[in-house]
Image (tube, rainbow, N blue to C red; front, side):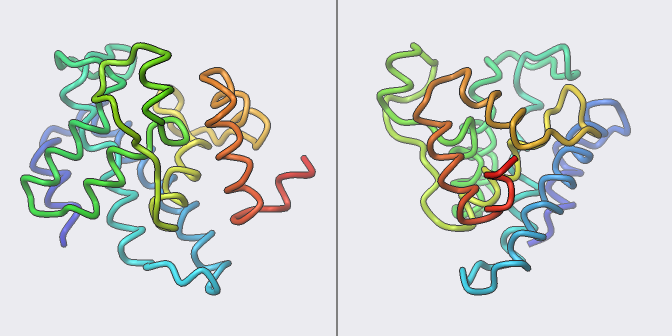
Length: 184
């Protein structure tokens, strides 16, 4: 798979949106790969992590989020599902699953219903270790300030704003991936 070819197809212009996508995705990718390299006992697929981390937000171009130069028509919360559809059209099911499962710390059907989110009423939770590590790494970088890394406390507070379930998942992943952060 050539993830750069896919990015270039959907983000052909050298503009602010492409810069945000690439900066955010590279930082998420680097963190996820660092975790992968630090935990060979988890048996994660390093190449897949690189590809999927670079493509996890591919769907933002079709969303309406002017603050990050997205001028599409769909609600931003749908970017994962949109990206998943784009990657399924490309023939990459496993990568598509990362797209649709990385929002928040994953979303349960109950969270979607409780928050009345414009998503199908089903669970969108990371299941594989690769899906989890990309979702986890993503929480340390926003697209509003793509160059800045959040510390653990800030990342946890950002997730907790949307409910305790996601925050608990994030804490569980921290114990697996970066237990040194738990003390911070």
